[in-house]
Amino acid sequence: AQTVTQSQPEMSVQEAETVTLSCTYDTSESDYYLFWYKQPPSRQMILVIRQEAYKQQNATENRFSVNFQKAAKSFSLKISDSQLGDAAMYFCAYRRDDKIIFGKGTRLHILP
Amino acid sequence: GAGVSQSPSNKVTEKGKDVELRCDPISGHTALYWYRQSLGQGLEFLIYFQGNSAPDKSGLPSDRFSAERTGGSVSTLTIQRTQQEDSAVYLCASSPASGGAYNEQFFGPGTRLTVL
Image 1 (tube, helix red, strand yellow):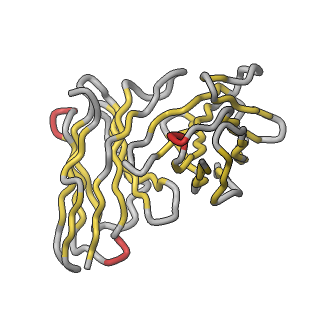
Image 2 (cartoon, one colour; image 1 turned 90 degrees about the vertical axis):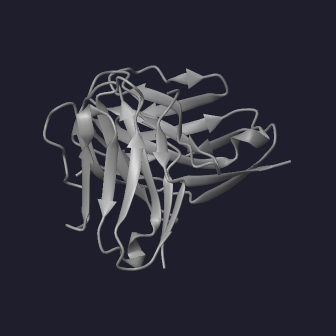
């Protein structure tokens, strides 16, 4: 069965600094999708970035980028120039067909 | 509507009562998902609807949980004889279709259920 592991329950970063959130997953499939979602206190889950497993190039969305290591089954999220509005729970998710599996999340604190 | 909506936003109930949680997906989205998010946990898949196909109920934790989707749109999650361990945030998400390269899930704000 597929699993998604986020080993950092909480992290803190100084405003304007860079932080990396870790995610590893386990699967025997070769074709799948990976996502990072942000959940602020409003509870609204927001898609931050996605990666197709067949693409070698790491996805980037403005200040957000991923380091996708398919062989190592690792999918970390890097947030550059951290802003106060980045404070939230971040969930890593794996998708194969219609099944999506989420990690337990990392709570990110931004220190002013 | 502009996004997925859920009602009520918060629900407090007594142990043993039944509750109904509602989800209005984005118009035209054929796929609809229910998740449960317990305190300090990730999202736990409950049930999935895709068009007119039979729903995938593999995530429902017990037979006290059921869900239906009327007319391929609005969905209701029902929890019968609620227990304290049912307390959680229940999230609904919709998606344009199943599978595919860019079928992002759009989430609602969730319903926080508290069972006293």
